[in-house]
Length: 438
Image (tube, rainbow, N blue to C red; front, side, top):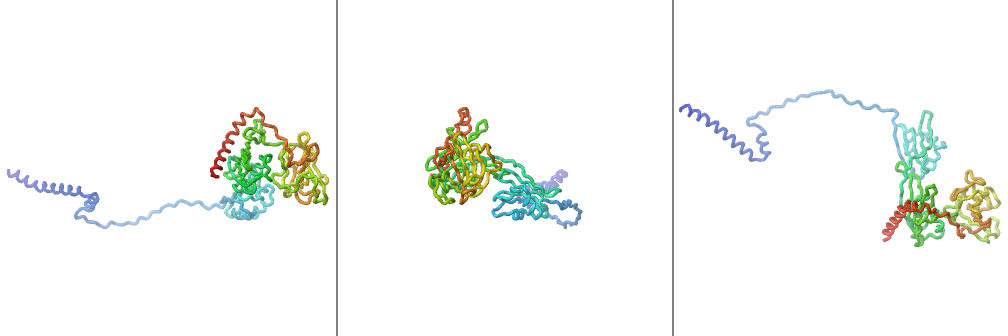
């Protein structure tokens, strides 16, 4: 009995201690988590000693840096600016190389760079001293000029660049002239010339244009490396002149013959162009009585004079064959073309003839046969143009020009399929223009 009592007495402190620990844990569990962290941060009667510090030095192997190369090369690109010379352009390209400047000035293959068309990019590769290693320039004809330094020195060549065709659409209103309108929307002059050729038989672009006439054009633009290089063909166009709409779409037959037609298939190409110059002004019209400025007397003027700068290209107004090429009296340098049957045309006062042109040669409508000058009895640069029927001069600005061959009926289905999307695009642009007017 005494033994049992001693055991019970000895267990009381243990039981009491367990109860105290249990209560302490229960109390701790009722406080937030940071309370737990605080409670267990330091144990009672803990001794915090000094942490011994030790300096450790290790040899870390550094990566080897590449050695500077003596043949380092750098690429530079600049766009040609107005007023640029070859020297100023090369200077902006970081080229410090008198030899390269002389080479580009004298190389026959580098002629395309002489034009320095503003906006065109030029790329140059140089070494660290600015010596030219290579140069790339894409001209407006789609040819790339490449200059490279070889063991023999600088060499140049031209090669055809890969061109990507994109279809663009633009509209503009006439303010003062067709060229001013195309300039206002960033269209190249060649687009204005094509428009005048397409609608020239229906619209006299010298006299008929009115303010607020407007046009829409769908055309091809050729790109190389994302840069526009040159304008391709107009695919479709609409011109609204004095409230009347004229439309044209391009169609090429399976045989490869292409031309412009109205949406219902009527051929817009006349057998003769009204004017042998794309754009010009009439300085003297067809008349039976005119005071001749060179001869200083009254006489008939059996043609039309078109004023233009010397060197302006002169086009054949119709398909034909060269009947005469040479110098003839007051005409100076003269070309006479014989056309279908009874028709012929004459082009006088030329400064020079087209290269390779000779008697008996076939020429196509729009082909360049010579250049404006002031040879013969001329007091200023202009083209004297005559339209003859059975060798009798007729006023070319008033005669009803013969029409061209209509579309072959066998191509009617193919024509509708090919031109329908173009007509739809013209309709889309018309709706956009009307919305802008509203």
